[in-house]
Image (cartoon, rainbow, N blue to C red; front, side, top):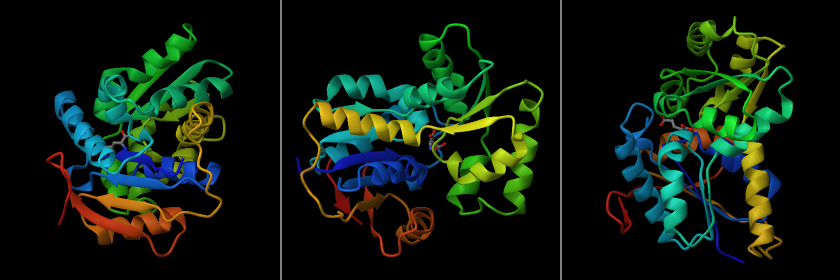
Length: 272
Ligand code: DGL
């Protein structure tokens, strides 16, 4: 099936999931939409995040996607169920895959979750983890300073190291053996987070398991592409295409990306 897979996020964070989908399914074309102009979603109300997530979804539906990946934990926590019920195409979020990945590796069942205020407040990870294993202990921590660091491209300097160390200090005495990066922006800070938490803590992001689920769903539904070439992915942002291109090229290790700035407030697309 030659239609693309749609991937949405509040900004560039969902690229960490898109990158895994590209790695595991190299012939599938991806349409990526990041709502950079309204990022971060983390401090916003659930109603607002739901409304924005529908706008992102409708934009990609108008481009005839065959599957939607909500590559944003904050949006998954409040909008996944509703969008899944309304659409006739498969819709996947990132929270359940993240929970599964953590439960695969934990040995002491003491799991930490870091995410946006919205995700942590929703307790979506706790609910997902406990629905699989009721005896797991979960420590959640909101890290509101992380997303702005990533969106500004400042994710590997001394400021990032200081902010990460200060923020995660309260998690270091909880005997965690596993830490879930419950925000798709955080894998860009992964090496700093790993150093801060130490070798005894396994750091988990949901991209790999999410991509594996995308692959299974497309296979079972007979929706995998027959294409044997490498497609040209399309990237849309509501913010600056220049800043988006710079960070995306660096993260994806690709030089020339097809990035366009778009407006998504109304259901119909309009190029700026
Ligand atoms: N990347 C998003 C997430 O996974 C949201 C970050 C934000 O916009 O606050 O939650």
